[in-house]
Image (cartoon, rainbow, N blue to C red; front, side, top):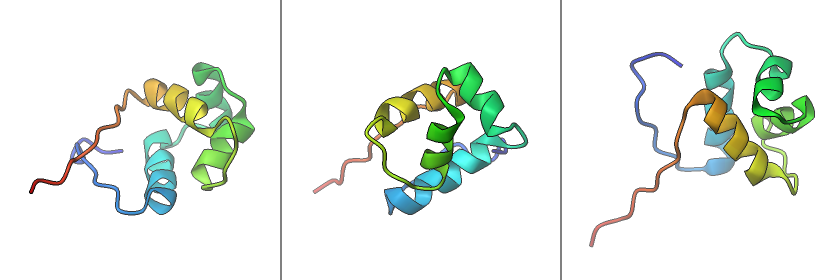
Length: 78
């Protein structure tokens, strides 16, 4: 992910999250990222392909820490 993108709004989590994860991974292999995150490469593959797994949120948290990315929520104003 380039330096230009500092913020991304998610409209459809199932479509936008996989795209973000793939861009964040860059040229690293799934195996390399999974090893640093302490997860199995297949779990990262599932996240990148938008597949559901019971460990998905826990895996996502570990992977985002490796990428040094924090999730936020934009609350609508009235």
